[in-house]
Image (tube, rainbow, N blue to C red):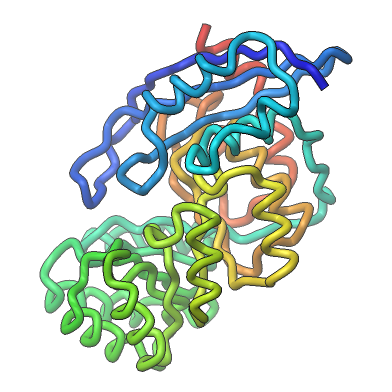
Length: 331
Ligand code: MG
């Protein structure tokens, strides 16, 4: 198939800067792509890189788009190098027929709690909104302070709610061991990235020595790295951000063939890219875990954020997102 290809680079301020391990992140950069097939079908895709998470940069993605030119075919699109996972996600999505999940299928969404003691103040609202899974960032303040907050949080948690912790690779061995011991036999769903991706042996050792489930996130920015960890015998979960991982059909094929314990997570993409992968996740039953898409209104703009995400996500959320509206918003 031959296509007319176009792309638009955009920059948009976030409503509130996100706190990351690399400092505050206040402005999202991305690229929307558009493919018009010779049969008249038009498809859109989103490139949403997070370079400090291991993806290509926005400049690299733009260079790839520029090199593609205005007239492309499937052979040219398939030849984009594997390391440009975000570009490949977008091009595959723009070519694919959107998945059509059953309207009755729903998946729980994990709501984010603020770091530190502020999590306790935010808890009642999240529970009142019906969230069954909460995520709390740790490794931000002193472990003894955070461990005290953990006790208070768990004491207030109804038995039907589970807590996931995300250390973003911040802990050394001693700190990680202390936390993993403290979390044993507690209602902790899993601990995300307890040690840095540069310490694979430590991660494997921790997973073997403690009963709490561990999940890799920073370690598996690409599908290729998830495959490597799987081959090493990683016994825990894999947090994958489809917008970084490459073409969605490859992710689906891997998940169906090997049945990993998969957590699907946002890469702070707009509603355009998120609706595309959520359609597939809902249609294919890719995960048994709450979706890591409870990031709130990142842009404070309904078109860009999509509808407010509640405790359960269903196909209707995806249906209410118009890729064309987002494309037009960048003109
Ligand atoms: Mg994480």
